[in-house]
Length: 178
Image (cartoon, rainbow, N blue to C red; front, side, top):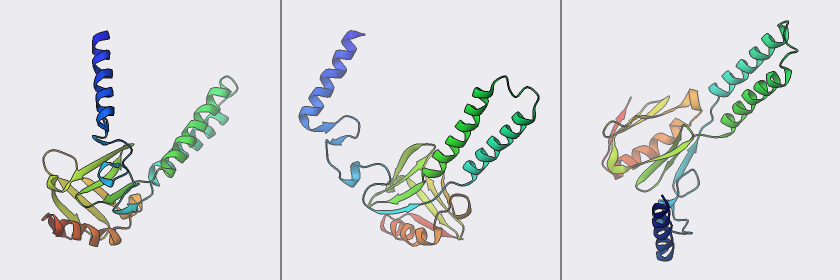
């Protein structure tokens, strides 16, 4: 086990001397957009807002609190009871404040799904479906579709459509309008 750790450390030192980061596969300290994942970077950025899950978690916390307060054994675990309600509300606030996004760069598009950032290269996109209330980006292969809803996640699909259409025409991606 020790020799493996030494090999990893030796390779990291070698990559640092070359000026490359082993994580981002690019120069260290470079803020170029092709090495930046997330909503901060070059390109057109469209942000939405998650509403349904935070509201559902808040309602669940209120229901849990009301059932717990009305039960006869409410005094037994009061600290754990209030901690659970507080954590449900905290989770609702965190999910509400973390905005989903779509960033359209020169050759890639970026988004966040399930608390991690993803990107698609233009060569890995099969087609883009544009409609009034939602936008669907279908990748090639067995990857899941990226769907951006106007009502569910509060994305401005009317502003996103022309930029994605321009991106699709630039990279020869099939565009469907519904």
